[in-house]
Image 1: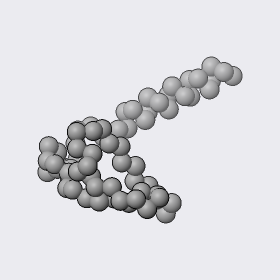
Image 2: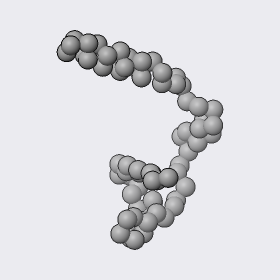
Image 3: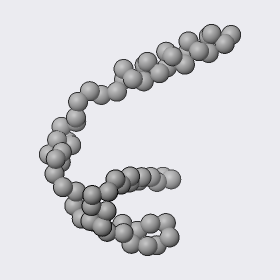
Image 4: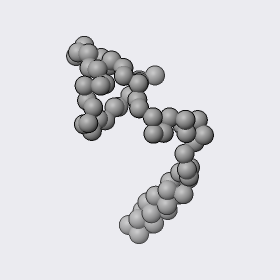
Length: 67
């Protein structure tokens, strides 16, 4: 039974990898290599953060919504 679960997991992983689109979507191509607009974002505590203050640093933006 364990081998069946293992085989299913491998098959699922392979299908997910093969289902990924290749290349860059045409809608994103005009933005590649261009600077990001300087925006001000508000964190969950209400503090404002200007994007330009992170210049030269690695920044991970996580946009999500419960809707």
